[in-house]
Length: 88
Length: 172
Image (cartoon, rainbow over all chains, first blue to last red; front, side, top):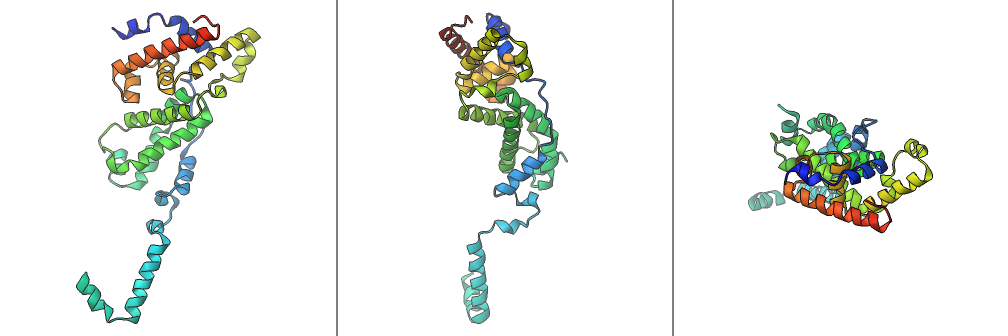
């Protein structure tokens, strides 16, 4: 069955539909959507590169806290350094 | 290097030119399915958001336009599912309405209602083919299904639409 044969008999229906629902083929974009896109990136995680923020801003706060604690432990207990290096 | 290839390679600065290059085309496609400019703008952004999220699996030498059209179609169908049977989305512009007499307006409203009752996956095929005059092949590519599947959906959409119209007293 060809495409045209497949459409045969739908002419009346097509006409009725088009009168009630005119084609939107000519609907053109009225504005630049880039500001909306930027907004989406600012609202959702994963878009830090567009907001100008540093990439490490996505690291959760408790990871930074843990890193701080580990750093402080090494400063106050330097004897831990060889042990740590051994385990690394 | 092509913008898509740059973006796929991790150059985030390439996303903006990619967006600007395709936004009009994507919007134009979506608005033909959802028939509401404001919703089409939001859905265009959603389609590009999905492109951004899929950047790791993008084919840098693929057809970005075709990929975006398929995503745009899925995004638009999801929207139709969410807003199913909300007739205002399908309404025609106010200037056209004023030109019609009451009986014609009622008839058109009935047709819109009957059309709005089609399941979104059938409605999108009927809309693109019967109203927007898209080719079967173009519809198949945008939906990511075979040509025969499109024709089958079209057959089912027409049958169901005729039934819906008959139920409302409109001779299809």
